[in-house]
Length: 148
Image (cartoon, rainbow, N blue to C red; front, side, top):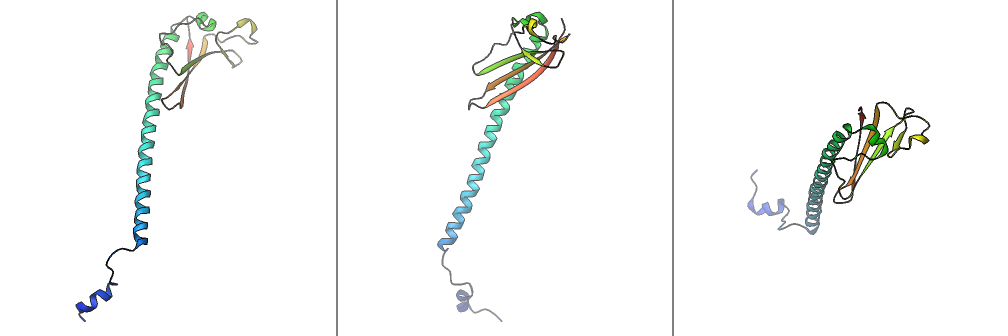
């Protein structure tokens, strides 16, 4: 049976626009979508910043360890070792030497007060802590065996 054009408006509900509830619902969906998008962009930006800080710290740590491996063990233990890597603002270096019992001692090490002698060859652990632009700490720790 064909539909009469006069009945067409009645069959479609005779709606001329959207109800206020539909407009509010559409705005809520749009706001949620935009919030997720902006949040994702902020997270990606922070992740990139942390990655960049870690890369910079790794390069500095590598240079420091290269110069440490060529230093005399006596200089390292005494704390007189001078690295080619100067500390930058907002970063700190901690150098520790390992004793035979497995404990680590910060340099300078007073060997007279140690209950267990230092390892031979000298095992050293270095920790670099630095803060990024937002003040978030980035920490890298590595070790080396110094034989000279």
